[in-house]
Image 1: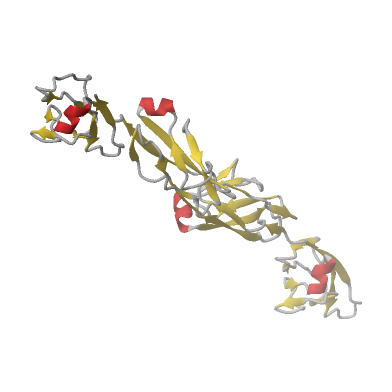
Image 2: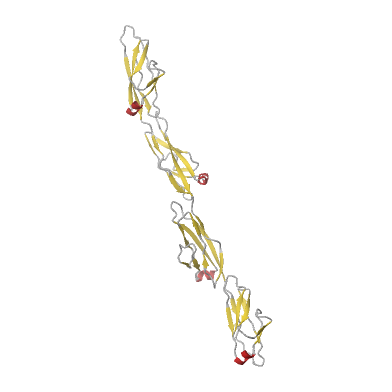
Length: 344
């Protein structure tokens, strides 16, 4: 009886193809194991399936004994089946990353096999798919879907079947930041009430200007007062950046403040007239506004108070008083405050 050479199988693929031979007898019978022989123990080339206890023990000794021996004593031979432990694969814990900072450092492990290989994603593995601790960068499609499942599979398995494990990567939404619409103000009324908004992140911080934020730069609706340099330049650009971002990268948005020049009103040089010819020819001018309007006198302006070069006729009381102050005030000021100038 010849039970064949020593055999090796794996715990996750334990069946062994026996190869017994018998000469000088009509047959043989397998014994010695607590598993099963297929199709039967009398088949010299039976397939042996070890029992769970044998798999746990890591080996089993099988005996082939001759049958139909005639006048001879039965003869036996043994073969040892060694059962290697199955590979163990752990793809690591599921991970949550941010869609604007989505690269995940994987933490796979493989035992009882030569190595492992990653699959299942349409993104990229760095340095390669065989690095158990590879950094995975998801594709745009995976980011849009919100998740991806990666699979780590053992390689170099010997007599074992490959083993796999999955890890789920979930991509959370990134912060959104809106610094508000661009604003136009005037040099003589330059303060701006900001209208920033931030979602997902814990808050936001204003920067980029040389002026001041009130009450502070972390108030999304702060009041911004441009610096003299910004007023002279005519513009200021402010940046709102998300804060308390968790796993996400900060997100920014900008808004521009356009600062128009303030109106200028010039009521003209002081004027002297005679009491018996007291009609006054005014000579006002206005820039940076739609026009001007005269006030301050009890007399009359011809043709109207809106005429910069109106003729003013004082009242008898004003003539008797001997002096009069007229005021030219800008109108059509847009975002600006009205400006005045006096003439005596």
